[in-house]
Image (cartoon, rainbow, N blue to C red):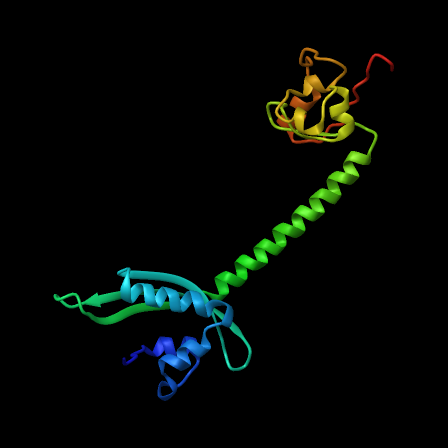
Amino acid sequence: GRISWSDEMFRIFEIAPEELTYETMLAAIHPEDRKAFESAFTDCRINSPQAVITHRILLPDGRTKYIHAQGKAVYSEEGKLIRLVGTAQDVTESRQAEQKLREREAEFRRLSQEFHGLLDAIPDSLSLLDINRNVLWANKSAAAGAGKTPEEVVGMHCSTLGYGPVAPCDSCPIDRSFKDGEPVNVSVTGPDN
């Protein structure tokens, strides 16, 4: 069959119109994606009226592009395949941005784990509270004051981080900090101090 492309398709694939054949198009598909592409193409012609696939193409200079393609089979009234029509969009930039985001998230998780490791090594009790004085995060020392793990104290009221449950403090310095935006250091002493 004959292949007819828009100028945009030639720009995406970076080939000249006189070079376009099914074979040259297929050769541009990344080897790891070729089977899935051919399967979607065949499925669209035989089984399904529509196909959607995201695949890579390799350019002559070695660059890779990500293409999001949608194809649709058009049939005659007798059910004979007349043609396949479709669109393709170069989604390389969004794929690269997604990859960078995944890499940054992985780096953030790694740094977060290191940071939490450092905070857990501090013998003083450290905790992060929300405006209602519920624990968002606590190091091991703070959680140990409640006889729990750091994960177990998340969501608990800060008054439980002392040595046994106590009533919330009157004139709480944490309330003052939330009200005026100034940092506050609080010392909690236990029965041994």
